[in-house]
Length: 398
Picture (cartoon, helix red, strand yellow):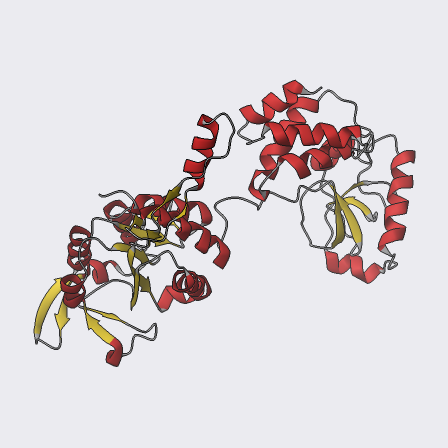
């Protein structure tokens, strides 16, 4: 039953296993779908979708497969189509409407009224105060001015609705969304593949080898052991601090905490800079002189085996990147920021740049440094998907 639906989900990129599909059939056999299309939808999504990031993809595949099934829900598709495309704009400000005075109905009462109103309504209504319509004073519809209403279709205009009917709620569950600490830790876990096996008298279970040997042995358990793995990853973390990065201070703090708590690194060294790396970096985000470390010392004491992660928005005045800098300690001009970054790139073959700002679509005066550094380094968005791509890049020599 619904075998074509199973194959459609797979074709649309959803990783639905046979066991999950059998669980769905078992759930239907037990009546968990409540003999309705809506119940079947919720049962499918609960059993077949593994991540919130796939909710939209599942919704699109579900609609594609069941588009010809008569809909018996509360909101007919013709009504939603009309509400999403109102025929006229009968504008009035929210302040004018509040001056008229509206009753403060309870949500339960409004929902019951909406159900009754939809059963009675047979045609479009615009600008009224009773039917489900647009641009009116009714408590139901969209584009209207009732301050305590239920929006049906359309888009928010005055933020006056207490509830939205028919709304898609999962469009923000994407892989390019803002990170949290757990997502940082999950991305760092990819670097475990760079650990090495060390000779030891104490062996550990080789899960993959055990499964393979057991299958080769006609299902009879055959356990395989292997030498333990030891963390071999050495990470150098360089974080932009202050200025335009103040807005992302919380995000950078989560990145630092996740890296510090991670047990996947043999070594982790964190330094800070402002806008661009020059002759000094700092051990503290406050960039105090007593915590400064010469960049030359970094290049001399950290070899090319280190994985380098630069975190910054690459936003600065162009002269900060391109013009030579006066070295007060030596009393002469030294390399520009671009020259220092080029030296760092040549010294460390495993290097990525994580940027909380997406690459601008067009280059202007204030985005030209972002563009230039984006073409010089392997730059990724500071998002779940971008961080995962960056970790994979760190496993490949430039």
